[in-house]
Amino acid sequence: MQKVIYYINFLRFWLLYKYMKCSQFKSLFDADLYRWQHEMNLATSGYYAQFVFLLTKRKDFRNIYYLRCPNFPKSLKFLCRENVQLELASHNEDNYIEGGALYFEHSFSTIIRAKYVGKGCIFRQNSTIGTKATDKPLDAPVIKEYVDFGANVVCIGSITIGANAVIGAGSVVVKNVPDNAIVVGNPARIIGYNDKKRHNENYYNS
Image 1: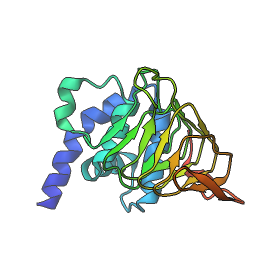
Image 2: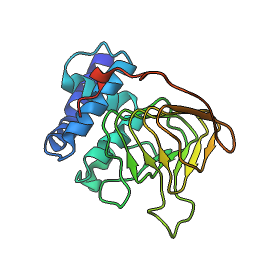
Image 3: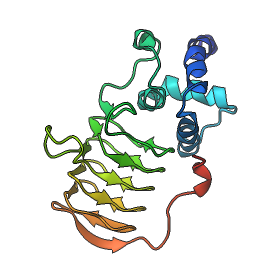
């Protein structure tokens, strides 16, 4: 039965695959897929097989798909419903997520509406990245590459989160964070610095 379901999904996602091949953001999606492949230690081989596996097993990966393929017809989204607990700004809005290799450890009740997100960032559950006021949609954080967000993080306002920073679980960030800084608390404070990148550069090919 599992094989039957697998082959049904294999055919079901073919249309999504074709749309992605034509997307102007395909290189970013490829970096996303490559990151997820390594983070989840997928034994599945081949690009399309991994594509099908992730869209089948991880609803948050579906949100990334629609982010990178904004022209996919809404009328066909019933083929692959996204995770309603995860909200990502899209490319046709003022705020967008540009960096590839985006990863969610968990995505329950997570909202990301940053002005910019660099490559290789990781987000966890119950986190909000956005503005202080609804009438100022551009007053949102700029997040540089390789930032690691813990769970239950609030990061709001026109601030910059430096490259390779670590935002500890439960932190409330309303001021700039330097590159490589480790911050915790409410309000967030610096408790140390990273001495090297914690990421495998081979993950990121965007």
